Image 1: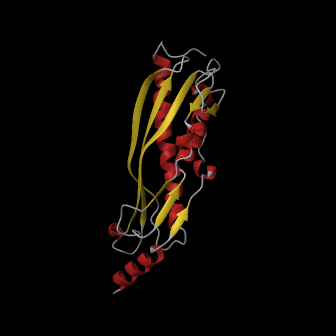
Image 2: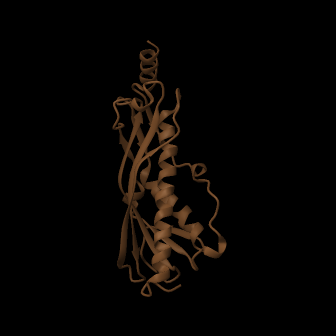
Image 3: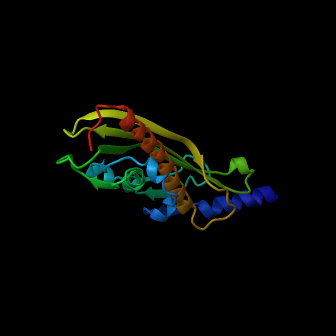
Amino acid sequence: MKLTISAVLLAALLAGCSHTATYNSAYLSAPPPVADDRVDGKALIYTERADDAYVFSGNPTSFTGGGTTLSEPLGQITREVAVYVFGRYFKDGADARNSLDNLSGYRVVVRPRLLGFSYEYNQLQNLGFAITPGVTLEIETQLFDQSGKSYYSKRFASGLSQGHTYFVSGEPGERINQLTHETMYKLMEQAAQDIKGVLRTNSSSPAP
């Protein structure tokens, strides 16, 4: 009976809810990289306006919360997390622009692009007593030379990223939002590490 009551209670709390998320830089707190390990110069984060404006709106993949809707500004999150992460990896920081004009002042031009997103409220793994939020993300990063030509790209996938399990929450959508920020941050860290390696080993990469 307790199992049934708990499951019904949690399902009722999620039923018919909608949540409009916003970008929140507080979800990205992390210690800076070692100063001596940063890359010389400045990075440019290049995005297209249509990508920046993209807002995901949809239901979770799970049965739990299936009647809920989340609106997530994934375009803005992708751009802002990229600026935040690459700004920590380059000694002169990072800028964001929607243009590939006048690239001479940048060590590297990075285009981060969202490829996929889904989210879930996993209740079954907790025997109906609690919910574990989950997010799946995939991104691609491209590098451009100073003529605006792409010369390198790589994809990064999170797999299922799970957040902290909770019993009752008045803001289940915000827990997904926080987990989305954290998962995007981890993927962008992987991308920054990868690109740092490319710059240090590829003699054809743009000069400072």
